[in-house]
Length: 96
Image (tube, rainbow, N blue to C red):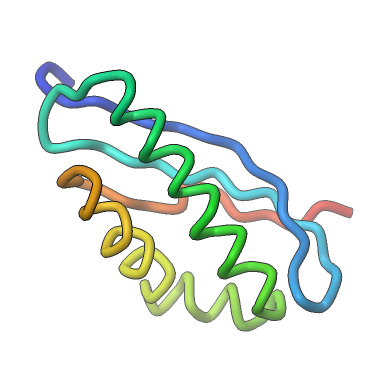
């Protein structure tokens, strides 16, 4: 979209109950952003997700994803850096 920036990422984490998961967050900013800000957003996203996933079991993560708690936590942390239009988890899958 013109006038907006999109941040896609693909990350792998271990949950508290030792399940490996692959996560693909999607962030869309409210307006065009400097690359340094985008890099900061990406770095903060990784840190917040890592912290969340390492403390929770797989089923707790799924329920927080469905109840939108995870996305809200992430958005609240990231809006301190730059205002976001969208903050979603596109894909969360279990790696076998």
